[in-house]
Image (cartoon, rainbow, N blue to C red):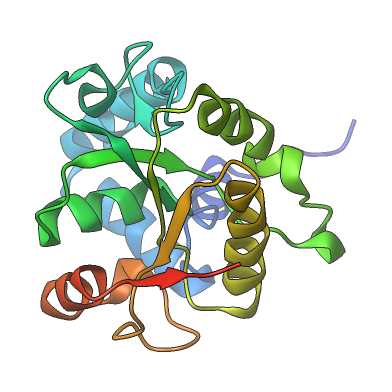
Length: 201
């Protein structure tokens, strides 16, 4: 039987699953936890296990939550006539923190990318179509990232919404082309969201 990797090496390699964490960063994190904050490491490990088991997707909007419906979807004060489409849960949080928007959301969990095998079904567009078919949504706000894939996704969803005679708008591009909403400052995002434009078929 082949020798198992030392536990320290396994820990360093496991930390590399995090975005933007390379070998050196992972090594620094591992040594920091072991040398200076073992209790913090235990808390982190415990919370990671709980989060992986207990955090799921909201049955309506697909945001991350611990209950069948997230707090926003369970809130009867939200405006059912407006639906904002975002790529990731972090984008939803940015809009909530930076704007006065009080409608509903739908989280794609990605964007169309045929080369990577990500089609309409993988980003929940079948579920979105069922939501639009109910007839409550009057305005669909496209807040996908201004990347090539994000624009293609927005165009696809716009065509879908037009089939239901729903008004479609796109957030204004105060957001830089090729950028990610997660890294845009709140003032720029608030301006872009307020200055969204209607998309005509």
